Image: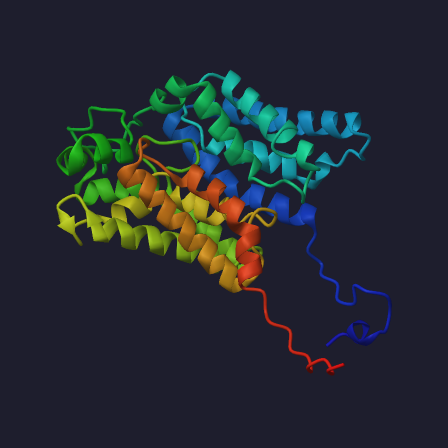
Length: 332
């Protein structure tokens, strides 16, 4: 053990080489392979969406910090990461105005007006997505693109550009199986060759990125595992043909569950810090996701589930706060 750990000085006594900037840019870099795959699947306009989203987030953060009299610290990567995550939860066929307005809202309203990095109550990218869903409901629910599949995945019945969750919710299991079922459908789901938002289509790349963050100890396993496991369990229990007739693998690999579990629900600012609270937080997010998917009006519920659990994060921290043991006070 290094001798500096035993030096007596003013707190903090233990120092770590990890910095906010290093963590933000590491997560940003881990997400880039998914962006490259989306460009390959959906076309080069995805790059334009990412450029507008990230650029607007960085510029609006610098402008807000200047207007509020704060040091301009866009180099820490938090604004760039927010812009990229926002683009990742947008349909690939939306207009370039949506990442612009979304990033502007995420930084100015969702982050800086709360006090900036470390003080925002909600995940900025997700609160911006909720804003865009209200402001541009048609574009946010219909601008999907059906990717052209490689020959080893090609299937003649891929006729619709509806997302897997949309088909499962509104057309039933038979319609889903006809378009996304079978071994080829499973491989397409894993690799990302299916309709969906820009950054949520490839569970394989997202799981690899999440594993890297776990190995680097940037995130812990508590929230991702509890969120995905709870969602899969409820999907299996509350199936379309009665109890225990659901398709947990389909729900786990579809939509933004893996993206949200590893890269959004684990946000340091809006999630709990204690392990027990993290488990409750992740399980709550998974349960709310399936409640919205199975019983709500939207086919997807990850965004709103995480935002609702953001509200409960302080409560969960209070519930699992360790008891302090002290001798009883003397009676007067």
